[in-house]
Image 1 (tube, rainbow, N blue to C red):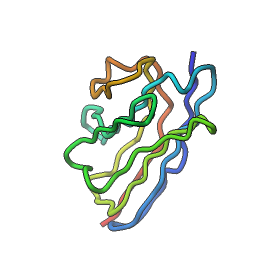
Image 2 (tube, rainbow, N blue to C red):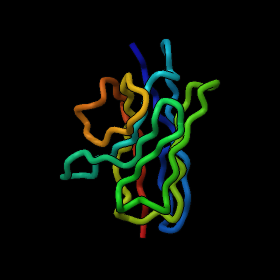
Image 3 (cartoon, rainbow, N blue to C red):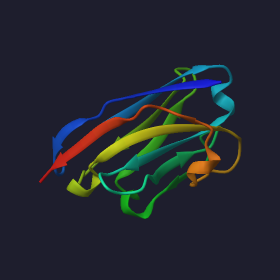
Image 4 (cartoon, one colour):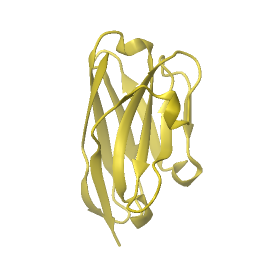
Length: 125
């Protein structure tokens, strides 16, 4: 069992940066692959970024590639999402997710077993 708590969201202007954190509790964090998803008002929840259990593999959705960076610190049981050059279309609730896996990064929501409550990111133009 893994509990996930996101933090770091807020209201920023376009072009600004934010870093989201996802703190995990429970056992075996280092054996979980992690992902970030987001859901904008009136839209489906979508994959943003993912990282393998070892941190050796990452994957990004096309709209955020080159602007967002996912990383993890196993000693702190935390995964981060550094978001740079934010755009109004990045406005959404951001969710952290975990899946017991090692090598591959999953982009499908159904692949993830555990979810956080989400943190709101609002980017004004």
